[in-house]
Amino acid sequence: MKLLISNIIAGLDASPGELRQQAAKRLQIKLENISDFKIVKQSIDARKKPGIRLVYSVSCQVDHSVRISGTKDVKILEEVEEEAILPGSKPVDGRPLIIGTGPAGLFCGLVLAQYGYRPIVLERGRQVEERSKAVEDYWKTGKLDTETNVQFGEGGAGTFSDGKLTTRINDRRCEKVLEEFCSFGAPEEMSYKAKPHIGTDNLKKVVANMRKEIERLGGTVLFNTKAAEVTIRNGRICGVVTCSGEAIETNVVVLAIGHSARDTFQMLYDRGVPFQQKPFSIGVRIEHPQELINYAQYGEASGHPALGAADYQLFLKGTQRTAYSFCMCPGGIVVASASEPQSIVTNGMSEFSRSRENANSALVVSVGPADFGTLHPLGGIEFQRKWERLAFAAGGSNNSAPVQRLEDFMDSRTGGLGSVRPSYTGETRCADINLCLPPYVTDCMKQAIPYFDRKLKGFGLKDALLTGVETRTSSPVRIPRNEQLECIGIEGLYPCGEGAGYAGGIVSAAVDGIKVAEQIVRTYRL
Image 1 (cartoon, helix red, strand yellow):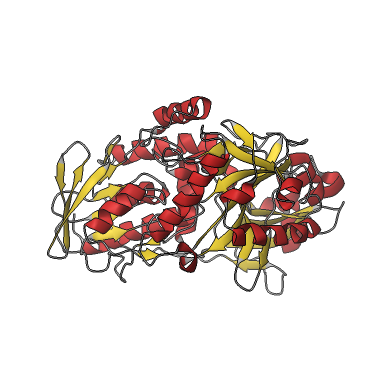
Image 2: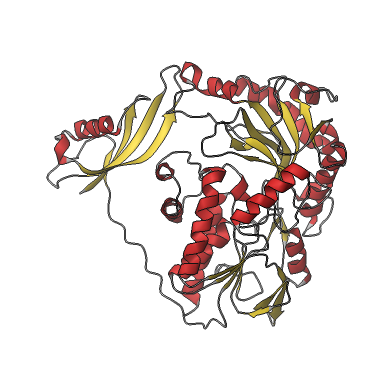
């Protein structure tokens, strides 16, 4: 029988052999009676410094004669058969079409391809190998390609991030997402680390391998191919017209367009697709020395290879707004992430090694429809755009990002740089970031920073560096859908993933892509 053993406590230098010995001791059996030993989960218990420990859950196979009644933290793992998904009866006119190759689009395409539906996947940007060159060129020269950038291109916005594979959702499909990532080249530890991160360097390889598998299974992936129009007749989707003028007829279209496809949102709205305003958050990127964060979290144990670069998660919930850290990138860099000219947008990125000098995180404050100043369903987009353009102006209107020492920000004055040097991938200029964010956002940030400093010693470092602005934390819109996951009022149109307002990260977007693919299989026949 297969068992799950939880709460195995080990030191930082423990080997798999020691864990196996602990499992045998817990079960009161001989070591040789354990087979198929596997680490299922590893987390860090840093509550008592310097005695930091690792906590494991493991699975193993043992003989049925082993008694586990009353054995603490041990349970039998029942084999759960996945529910078979049988193809539906509706015909597909043409082939299912997916717009976007972020996590939602890729996983939707992969699952449809695995079921034999041979999807067509459209991507407005370039494939990941060429995309990386275009992004690096923008970082070096400031010359923006509006179709291929940090937001657009194979893999979506998450390709240039830390590649976090954590999620708050509880869905059986999360396991499939991690398994597929590992099968396409992600490090094995993704399957058991409590806070797995794939790193931008690995993620680029993984998304390319996923695309190749979709194609191997009969799917088609078209790059540099933006969906310029959708054709809707009598409440049904009938096809898509690409930027080259090619008409693709189909009655199944998945909108996995990401949170920054503003021109596509406008086109869909003009064609009658319903939209709703949605809250999100805005703020800045804040940088500290990674060694400071390591010591604050791990004390004297910081620097141990089993711990790696430390992260943090902070929040302060007020009566009207919440200030919090978001998308924390240990040992990473702040990246220029604009998708429109004359605007500054920031994000964070780390390689798998997380070995850079600075730690960075978004420091953001929640905003909502009441702040947008309009009832228009796309009002959140204009709200984002306003602050991105003010950041562009604050940086000198030459694609430099505004930066500011934390102490100067708190005092609302422009100063110079301190000991923390900017990791931003473009040019920077010292400016007052208070001028390129709403006062209610900066006031909330200033209230939160002393509290965060009490929670994480050193967070309030005077020389900590702010880079503005972070506005693309999540989609500013939601496309409403029914229980069959179709857009309300438009048969065959499936809003999907983060851009449509149904996810908030790589894993949750991938899960939503799988859910949509499964619904298409249930509805349509091969």
